[in-house]
Image (cartoon, rainbow, N blue to C red; front, side):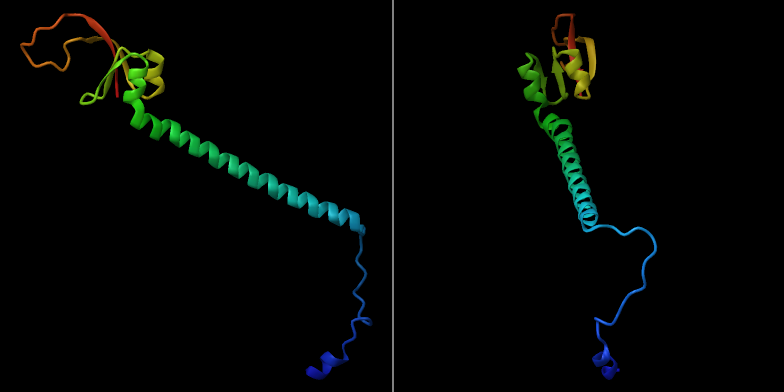
Amino acid sequence: MSEQKKDYDPKKYKPKEQTGAKLSQGAVESMKTDSRMKKIVIVFLVIVLLIAVAYFIYVRIIFNAYDLSKQCELLGGKWFSKAKECEAPAENWCERNGGTYNSCASACRGLSAGSICTEECVPVCKF
């Protein structure tokens, strides 16, 4: 078999002619460039998607989970940690953050029985 390799002359080897249109060198280079551009666009879109998912996770889960009390207070409300509720919040803020809005909760909620309290409605967002 090694003798056959020595006899091989690449100048004598001619492949069969292909039928159909031949592509010019410029067309081949253009196809390679198009393929590279497609890959770049796909990578860019994947990166944008990952950034969007990370932002969504941060804003909706991490930021809200740890800062509801701060947000409540910044909006002029009063945060109750044990009950996980904000007194006097804006209704749209409550719903946007996954809370249940009650426009007329008792001002006496959370007090022990027999406590003196005024009977009035207060807006509350319960989480």
